[in-house]
Image: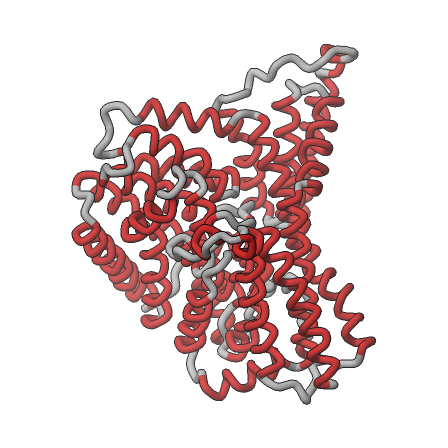
Length: 537
């Protein structure tokens, strides 16, 4: 599809939306909009479906998300134009930008952008790239190093995406690994790692939905049954070692390897700063800020959970506010890094202050997409999407207990994909699951794990997911390119995970179900490899 065709398509959609709104003004003028007939029905999922479809078709994410928001407003307002605009902007965009949690995440992103810009200008990133290039000699080594670093940063997925991206970009670029592949590795070591790490913001979120004192215990019990997360890690390592690529990713990797075109003709998300890097920069100029960021963010999270007010570490982490913790931790890191670079004399005061607007500018695309994604979620919430899914799950819980883990996995995938949020999916499905099964029931543990795995899977696939957006930002990769190249890989793991949950429903024993799932995953990838070899020949 040409750019001109895409523009005409978007213009036509916008015109249809406006005409539909205007045509209903006469019926609604001077009156309050009647209750929406679309509330708590399948239609409540239409706005994100439209946004996702448009993004994949047009390759233009901003307009697609905005059209989804307007469609959500139209359905909520029963096609009353005045109420539509008020709801979409006031209750959607403005409300999302005034939410304290969201504001904290935006502040964290801006500060992280500034820190990354400072590291680049100080020459830390370039120095690390030179050092890593002398140690990492192959494309496989660069990919495994990215996976290893992503696995070590398990505190929070936002932090993981942007930190791994800023550190590993120079290494993967020198190894001729496409930015799409880097974005996949970042995304696949973000949420999938966090969801099986007991000390993470995700563990704290999941634990908060369970009775007091049992949340972390249940989370740990569910880890061996979190097939999607575990199989994703296995798949990444298999792909790196065997040099297997398929789907759209194959084209991106071929262009990077043979032509040195790591973007496959697409533009970077932001301009690189390494060209103007300080030649006096050392590896410590990158390592120290990263270590500081990790330590300060952990301290910030346990501080927000009341650790310094008397709570123990586990309780404080369970009660932590990731937004507050990351914001405070990054702010302290910025101040210390600023002073450190001044003392090292690698950057002047003027250069350091100049990094502030540049760092903010580098994060504007990610912030804009996040804002629209949050607003789209607000539209689905106002249409009762959660209530629709809740009823769907409760109605399926009757005589399908053995199949329920697989059913819950699919529902969690769909809900998370449509809404772009894992945590929101946890909040809907985990309480429902626990109302059906007691905590002592092994099938209940499998179902809770299916909730988490499905939520991460949908989040991993969705172009409106904040983690997916962060992965694109971290790799400085075109967002739609990242989504389209990652999707076949995520769906492969999802298919194997679905079969594994069918087995676990009948045999809720991790010692049996997990090895079978791993064997199925490796077997599936071997078959893909065998199919691809003749195609290449």
